[in-house]
Image 1 (cartoon, rainbow, N blue to C red):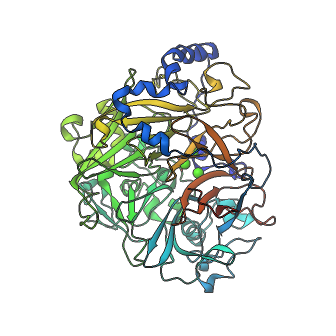
Image 2: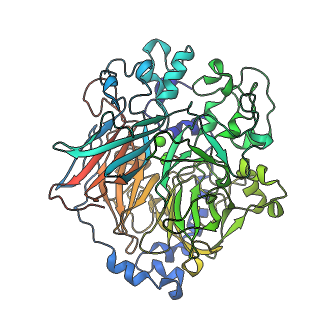
Image 3: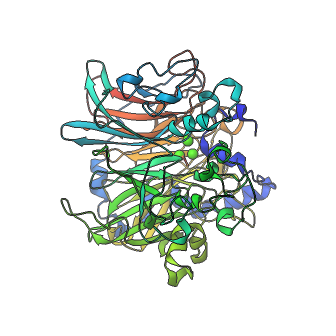
Length: 620
Ligand code: FEO
Ligand code: CA
Ligand code: CA
Ligand code: CA
């Protein structure tokens, strides 16, 4: 792979390049297959009538939700193709924190537009390629936990390295620019700023000591030479989306961890390694300088990554915990809600073409103020099965249903999901639960290899060679996240109505004025509106003409209306969203920007920005 040509690709796109698949061939057949679904989907996609698929009995709370759902409080904006951020009239934005910005005053001189961040300060600054994040209020302080998903090695390393680390120090530099940042932020005369030297400021990297819990902790599958007990893994990596527990901790989700491992010698190509795309050369050549990442020396090290990891942002000395009970896959985010009886439910997507959507349900229950022990280590993992009649069910992954041991089920959740007949999805990205009713959404970003015998179209993934993506939503039976049944529909099928008059034109709530592709990040604001971030093709040409740069849109779950709220600089994706405690400021992540955004000179800097209303009203 020519690394120089990949500077502005998202990590998801890089992972696709690593494993390219043939695109659909017979276009007539593609269209015919997709159109044959039109009648089936027509009822769900024509909004207004859309909710009828749930049946009147399912709509008990819909009237309330409709009354509470706000109309758009902004005039939608047009597309952009420039290297700037655009927000609606009456709104403002400014950077909150940029890649390389100091968390401690002794690192204030760390950043240089020519050379980036020096090694000796690389764990005392904000990491690169911001992604999922959450805000916390604690003892009068506001804390922000933020993922740094991956690193653009060619902008972090000296030009001579050409994007490939040449020694252990350069590997360490790259390791330190990724992981998680916890920092205190405060509102001052110039808006929200990082609080330098706050005792809460902390970096968690590929080297931070962690522990594991749950059924797979300590198993043979996770033991290594360095950790014979299999209980004390190091590092969290490719931290993509995030989640917030009901008890106020941070969930960081390990996504494309497979790309960090390589082999300097022979290794056994197991079914597990193949299914998770592990083998060959690591993207950052870690294996050449650190035996932990060398499959020929530590074949179990990859099994210690790909988990949901819990961090207590309020205690800088706390040890992060990898929760094996939530399964190992390419975790996008973790959306926690509660079942009617108080059990903890976590919805999670596995972002790979054809992989699955998961749900974890704890055995124990929880209420405010009660202990949290065991809630994320003792429970059952499920995969989703979507039926053509718009019903669905959660299939439990147990030794009885899979014929696998519980350790194997959790470490190789994908293999377990295949055994029970889970529905193959178009790359499940973020899951978001509607706060106004029992209803959940998942962004299915796109799937270049959907179609054909290996991955036939199915009801929630109805288009071959799906380059635009869709958002599926489901309502649990009995309005209970703990129920095993659900009904579902598609909230939106992205598409280009200016180019296509068939299903590639998108659902009826997609127009020339709000076109987008590749929905990815998603979160609900407290008023019940769905904020949708994109990570797609921003060429503004061909099938993507009229869509412009990546963007953030806001969708009304009741009417289906979707309006463009923000456009990113060219090259960037928009990913990560949280709000200030007073809901007057939205914090939005801008990852892998192009040009020299936002400084206008030097290297491009992935950043978290603050967006607010000029009149000081709430926006989320
Ligand atoms: Fe890190 Fe699937 O996005
Ligand atoms: Ca990304
Ligand atoms: Ca994503
Ligand atoms: Ca993506």
